[in-house]
Each structure stands twice: as structure tokens, then as C-alpha cells.
Image 1: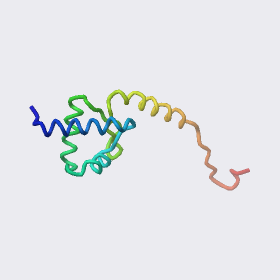
Image 2: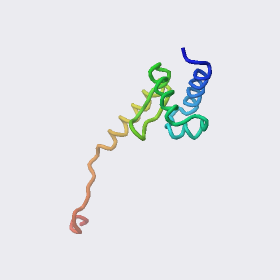
Image 3: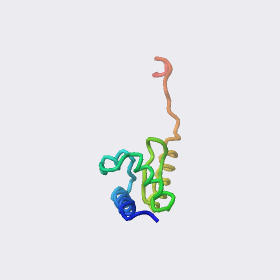
Image 4: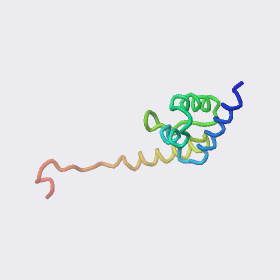
Length: 99
């Protein structure tokens, strides 16, 4: 059973993530919560993910933490962007290509 302080910190993290429906990065969280080290925040966030209280979207430096209900719209948005970007791009290789 986590201590009361840890439980309060987890609840504080969830509230912060709820305020950012598009997701929030670890860097943004660490700037908001100065009193906790980045590594401790990573452990707290991992605990919240394993409890399924929050979810992640992206990977590496683009990883965002968000509430699980907001993931489906972001996945739909990503799929729409990929479909729109499937168009062929013409790049002229010489001056003749401009004619």
C-alpha cells in the first residue's frame, strides 16, 4: 500500500494530466512540479500507467501522458493525417521540369 504522500502525488499527477487533454510530456510535468526529480516522476507515471489511470501516446521524446478516454480521438486524428499525406509530391530534378 503506497504511503499517503505518494497517493497524493499520484492524484496530483492525474489532475495535471486531466487539465491537458491533448497530452503532456514528462518535461512539461517536471517544470510544473519542481519538488520532484524527473526519475521519480517517471516511476510515478509508470505506476499510474500500470494501474490504467493514465495512458501514453507516442514514443521517446514525443511520449505524452493522457487520460485513456482521450486516446481514441488522437489515434483517429493520426490516421486522418497519414491518409492526407499519402499524396504524391512532384519534385523537379532539372530546370526542364519547370516547363
